[in-house]
Image 1 (cartoon, rainbow over the protein chains, first blue to last red):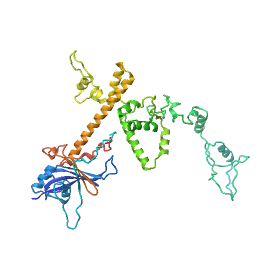
Image 2 (spheres, rainbow over the protein chains, first blue to last red):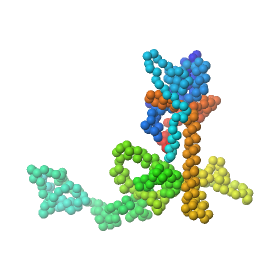
Image 3 (cartoon, chains in turn orange, cyan):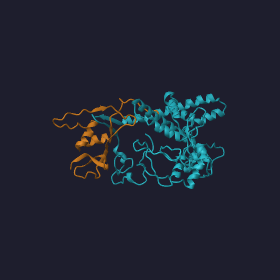
Image 4 (cartoon, each protein chain N blue to C red):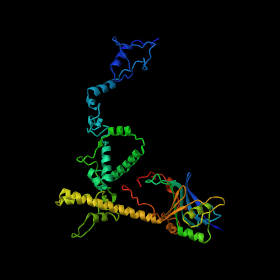
Amino acid sequence: MVVKIRLARFGRSNSPFYNIVVAHARTARNSRPLEVLGTYDPIPKKDIYDPEGKPHKDIKLDITRAKYWIGVGAQPSDTARRLLSLVGIMNPKVRQGEPVRPIRMMEPLKAQPKTTPKTA
Amino acid sequence: MPPRLPAGCSAQLANCLDQSLICTAQRTATAAGRPSWPSPTTQQTSSFSTTAPRELTVKQRRFWNWMRKGLGKSLRNPKPDGVNYLGSVIGSEKSPDIPFPNNPQFRSSPVLSDTARERIYENVMKKGLPLKAVSARHGVDMRRVAAVVRLKEIEKRWEAEGKPMALPYAKAVLSMVPTHDCLPDSQPFEAINEMHVHSYTQQQIFLPTSESRHFTRADAAKAFGDFILPPEKKMWVPELLQFEKDVAGGASIKDARVRFLETTAQSEKELGAKHAEQDKIVRENNTRADTDRFQFRFEAINVDSSGKNGRHVRGVGWRYGMPHNDRKPGAVKIPTKVE
């Protein structure tokens, strides 16, 4: 059976929250997976001290395990592939006729200025 | 045709006219004590009811007498400091800070005035004094000092952006409560070194120790429990202890102050370095990817943190086969601190 990397929806109505899981393809969405690779919170949030900046989405991911599962032939779903391509584990899926969306990777935050609020 | 007056009401009307406190409609009385009716052609400027006002009850009359001649006379206008509570004249326990005489337990505590908040903001942000020093100087809790600085920062930003301010509202509210100005010679605003008394420390423990042992507060704390902290670790401004020790040891107040400023600045610096270190760890474990709309923040985790059966509480993600207690009664979902 095909092993897939996919999202399992948890959370509540109107507040989704996903586990990024490795599971057999034919099992139910929220059944116990082979492994939980991480989480994906799709609700965009703003920084408290930088309300003007771009909203961010939080993802937790065990990159080593994700690479391992891809290496042994696990098939990511389209959404999972999109997330994995953001950290360079896979190439993004490109459909014919669609422009490639630019992704700007940041080094582990060396470019970020050090801001420690005085009152924090 | 002008409205007719019901019979026998003129006396009551005249009575009403005398009591300007109760009558609010503007009207003119003739020499005979009867109001002059506007002619049908002239514009009537105020609505006028011909219904006779209710006569004052005995209690109402007593109340107004009390307000005019009795103890209530002093309550008609606020005092120069802004408040004039009923508890200052009546009640079992007369005190100027009791607004409700039947509940003497309720004391109206002062709040920081805008001058005080501005002064705190200037000390912290313009003069760059350590938070602990500002807190000790004005006798304002550290957390309150931090909150004042945060809110002032927002206020200044809004001012710069030209956002409208609810100033009349703020003024009205502050005029109704006692305020504290944080003047150099004023009393401390609140106790700044109060600490939580852990219930473990309220028991009697018979702990045998040798007589020669120097038994300190740290030892006592350890005797109560491994995680109980001695007071000097729990208080917000422990540097005040050294200040008092210096003064008691014969150092001049000026020297003690200089030392206090130095140590508080040093402790703030160390705290800043600690935060920077934590930030650095977070940054090293995080990767960010910018797309055109959002920034995706990847935090590195370890799948093994969920334990052998995948149910460990430190595991990442929604747990399988375990209840999620976000709707359990009694769970506090309101944030209790500012991140």
